[in-house]
Length: 187
Image 1: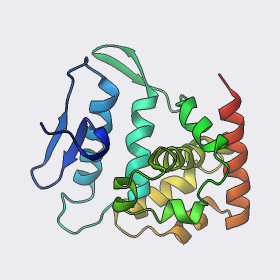
Image 2 (image 1 turned 90 degrees about the horizontal axis):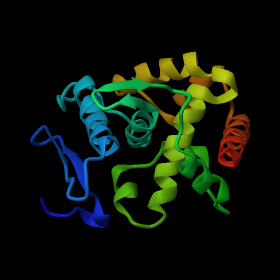
Image 3 (image 1 turned 90 degrees about the vertical axis):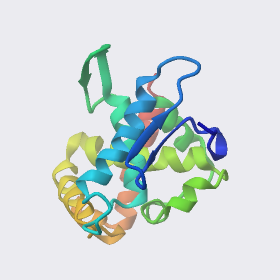
C-alpha cells in the first residue's frame, strides 16, 4: 500500500473497517496490535454510528499502551500493565517544554498528522495514560476506569479526566511529571 504521511507503515480505516500493516522488513506484532487497538476502540464506541468516540489523546495512548504490555511466546501472548516503553518516558522527560495536561487532553487528530513534535505528542499521550493506570501505585486506576466509561460513551472532557482522577490541574501535572521522571530513569 502507499506509504502514509510521515512514513507510517500501519493504519486503521474506519471507512472500510480495515486494519493495514506493512511488514516488508519483518513481522512486528506491536505494529499490528497498535492498529488493532484503534479498530477495537472504534467498534466499542458504536462502529462510527455516532454513539460515541474516544478522545484522540486516548486513542493514541491506548494504541501505544497495549503493544508495550505484550510479552510471551508468539501465539501465546501475555499482557502485563506494569510494563512500559522507557523511550517514551525519556522523550517526555528530556523535553524542555512538554505540553501540559490540558493540551494533551485536547489533542485532535490533526495534531498527530503534523510532523511537528509528533514523537513528543505520542509519548505524552502514552505517559499520561500510563500514569492514570499505574501512577501512584495504581491509586488513580478506579477513577480512570470511570473516565474510560465516559470516553466510550463519547462524554469525556478534560475536566472529567481531572474529576475522575480526583486531581486538580496543578496536582495532576506534578504527579504525572514525577511518574514520568521516575520511569525515564529506569533502564
